[in-house]
Length: 162
Image 1 (cartoon, rainbow, N blue to C red):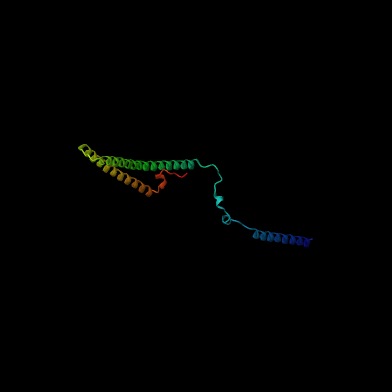
Image 2 (cartoon, rainbow, N blue to C red):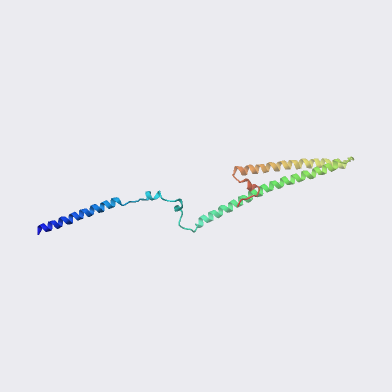
């Protein structure tokens, strides 16, 4: 009986050792993945947040940025338009004064009144040319300032791309 007991005990021990060895080998053979292994398989689209609803603070910031940009566009458009109108007015004044001058100089009879009118027209012409030059300089200054600040040239022409 003791020999049967020892034989059974030996069989149980050998079977237990065999099962431990086999399960240990299986653990060594089964793959083990860490976060580092997963990183190489990530797509750029996987980083997006799962929430589809935008954050209210972000939405407000975007709206504020759009509003600020719209105000800037309006400012640059209005400023450039103001200087362009000055230039157009000065050009119209020059044209009108030159026309008046040519009409009064074309006559042969030059009395004192006409001479006075010619002198006045010449002064007006000089003043209009000076205004044209100054308005052109002011517009150039504005364009230079816009260029330094990185403002698109279309904003000065009131051409906004949507």
